Image (cartoon, rainbow, N blue to C red; front, side, top):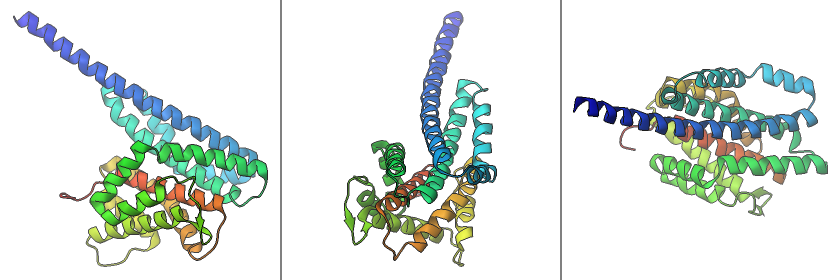
Length: 273
């Protein structure tokens, strides 16, 4: 009987190995899709933005170094250990995309050339599919509803049919709703820290990492995203009472969704929420 039990044990181990392998393949496939899109973004940036600007941006950006490091580590371990590392690598890849999209938005969205506008819309449409698909929107909404139902409601209002909604008083409704979503989300999270002092803009993300990072890896991810968050926060503050173009409004709305998606995957809410 003990010999037969060993066969059963082998079957269980094989099943577990297969499950991990399938999950790993899904994760690697997801990263491959993200890298496909990242290449599309960098190719577009190289064709439309001065190379010195791109070089300076890349050299000063820690996200790409972290992405390459994590990817190489993930590809060298067993399927069981690789599943967790691939998930972390996926989040880093999404942050790299967010930074690249922000670069494109800053330099391209205000241009009037037909080629630039068509290219930007193509990239934005694909980006919307990546960060604002049904599964992603459901995950973000679930997180926000536990945090603050009003934020969840504003998110659905702004993220649904993002590419087709019309303008309202110069600003598309999605941007207004999503701006409100982000403000409510950050304010609620900062209130939950229990700290009496209101954080400066530069302190929001580090405080988020300190109190709510799911684990040490998530804390690193959150802190790396700080520059991207600050640039978005500055853009939102500067354009709050301005009329802006549809391309820029769409880009900023997608940047907000990207941040919300990121927060929902790296932040652990207090027990009971």
